[in-house]
Length: 499
Image (cartoon, rainbow, N blue to C red; front, top):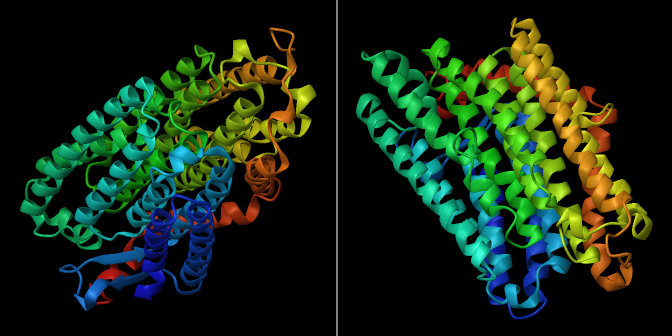
């Protein structure tokens, strides 16, 4: 079982080493693709094991919990690793055509695989200190990917990205130290047992808020999100896609994990804060998107906006709300990564992502136009795509809790999202080119085109499957929410039945 848990981490690291050794030729990109495919196989095997056996845990080096390094997978961890592997494979294929040879020679594919390993490690770790370690792995790899190319805009975005994330790290480490001083453990399952026994519960709440801020920076919630739109539009499109799909979701995952497993003693206070944060995050993100006129900047602000929906599910803290947050989390990773991939193809054909400088993409590339509409409509919540069901579950949960104003905010943000997606469609795809020069597909040869279109089409099909056949996905999310709200099996799997 330890091998099964560690393979989704070990495989990307091995792929990173091979990719770096072969970085001067096509071998590096193929090593990245093959490694991503192998990780997907391991993620499917892990998911199958969790579905069959329930929560699975492994102790590295056979050190007993809570003294050693624990890897643990419940349904939430397993599905996050699986969707990471799917996104990683899609982006690895896309990067074969998107990433230029001079960037590849700097070690792009190796850093990409290290980033994927860090994300998988964060989802599978069973203790807080190792969560910090995986955060640092992700930070180093993502900063390297962000500044590859060395442009002024990239350096500026990278500095903002690192500066705020270092502040998050300081808060995170301070919270870890205080929590260890109070409980004598950093194992998540052990913390779930010991935190309620701490005499000074007021101090526990203070530490909980520290973790909320630290993870809030990673998740890009209000008012800690400004680093994201300053950075995500600057690197290669493949890098933007994997950042958009995965990085902020690690922060959301950490919030969900900690505030359903460990910090559950003062929900009336902590989750009230989360509720207001969710509302402001949704509103500020969507208003920021409405003010932009660049394809990637619009999408970057919409990452912020959509994070608010996920935090809303956690804040409401009902079975239906947690179900909706999980469904939204999975849906959004697929949709948002796909939209950034579409933006990359649009840029390759039209030569820009500024909406005022491009146009006529529908006439030139009708297939790309259709592939844009699928994730765009899903993001906006059009039925019967996956985004509709995700929003429906959360709004229904809010109404059942009597939070009518919150439901209204969520619906209004959905309408503004439609506005942004319609603006992209109208100016980039439908309106003729402003200079009267229609973009040409001839700028892309067939060897370049298929690695760009194939991942976009595959993710669009997956979005349609989730939307058209939502029942098994909702049932899975329901089981996942039940595990989160009833953590006894998680604790027993890590610490033993005697716990």
